[in-house]
Image 1: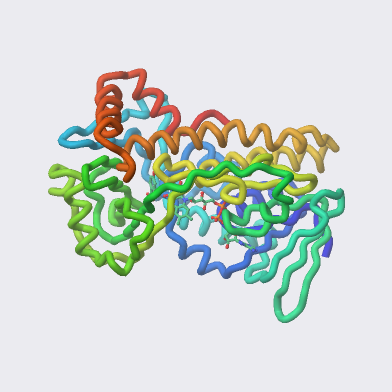
Image 2 (image 1 turned 90 degrees about the vertical axis):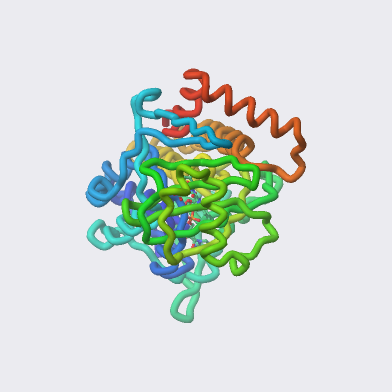
Length: 389
Ligand code: FAS
Ligand code: PHB
């Protein structure tokens, strides 16, 4: 088979990119290791920046997002008895939209046939070949035989564990990594949220986050040591811990119910640079990972995809290869700022095992400063809504 672009991975990045290319009449094929149900079954991001909402609007796939997404003008930082509301609308003139990554992926997935986007699910043993040449190709196994796709570009949207980044010789790129000593234990339950806006809490027992998917479905997290197993956390233990860490005001409004999903996600900060190697471009988690504290992961994938689509469309529609050459620098400029914000908010809102009284005093001092400074709140707000693309 021959196509212009082979996209590896049908998560949000791969599907957004595929739709953007097809909407401009550029041929591409998406290869996905798993089946559609598996991809939809992974409960992940919940907060969308404008860049992500705008891509869905540009594709005309934002009807459900606009009908069901919750517009949030602010979020809260809790510590001790104190609650700091970051009024993102007043401070930036922008807002965020709470709409689950699962639903966004579903919207993209369900439109693929009508939009002529070819997605090959259950493509096994995907391998990238000759990525440094102008004629790369991809092989994969399906229905008991090997297949080959010849293309001009490969875009790796295959997440942190996919083959794309690994197809780049380690010497051709540099990995920057920080692994955190805790993970986030997340619970999804069909109960109303305890608060109409998100609450990030720094408590002496640890971090907690009260989020949501709708007015009847809540998403909560507590941080746990990476050694913890989800089976050691029955629902009641999670609800008890949330009530303590979120504080009495929020606790009074927590509605408990059975979890419909429960998992522990490890936290890491990771960047692999550059994000282009010959005819291979990397997008999203294939190139970088952020701790979910700043709600940046999915939204960074969206800005990468926007830049990659612009570069590929310039190449195929105008014969202009400059944007392809400039893709990595442009994407990384935004990636590094989001990495910094996510790391700094994680540092501020979590208890690190190695922290002593001084580090704790620094956290309290920074939170007190944020509580008293419009400038400090503005800095947080403009990063949270998403820096310009
Ligand atoms: P994805 O990982 O979503 O998609 C990659 C796709 O490639 C998958 O469908 C995978 O099956 C496929 N793939 C992998 N290997 C392949 C192969 N060999 N061949 C073919 N296909 C292959 N972000 C937030 O903003 N907030 C959050 O709360 C949050 N929580 C998260 C929790 C977890 C457990 C994880 C892992 C991530 C979380 N993230 C969160 C980040 C997450 O939302 C990502 O940023 C987002 O999924 C990025 O999208 P993609 O780059 O498309 O990668
Ligand atoms: C979520 O709702 O899953 C969510 C929201 C905000 C974050 C992380 C996760 O920072």
